[in-house]
Image (cartoon, rainbow, N blue to C red; front, side):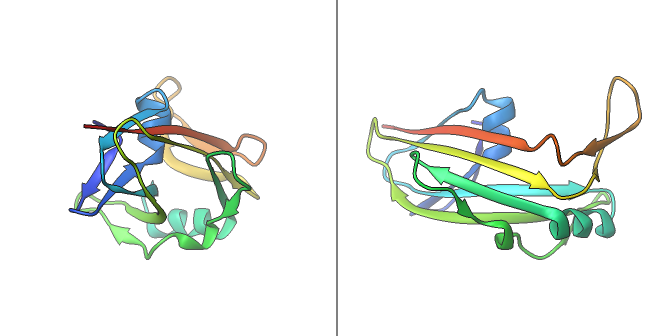
Length: 146
């Protein structure tokens, strides 16, 4: 499944952006895995990723609980082999799902000023921007399968 990242015996990383935007907000994981949430931000150079990190506010809510601020959980900048940089966030929920159980993750990634998002808009071929008035909404339902 496209929303699953690395998987160790006891934990599985669920990538929230692919879950939200590519998988229709649904993700299935093997039962008995502890759920670790993953988010990343990439851009073509170190400065753009650093700018994002300096201006972002990332919050998540699990199963409708009060939102928690995980803005300071992004890791060190990592270079990509083909150019560009990224920073990744891991948030261990501490939750292990049994067969048929699910976990609802809702969140927001917002910025305090406009940052180039490192991508080029495919229709206009112009630099795409991430704007304060358009926060990214995260919605991912993670369900354990046998």
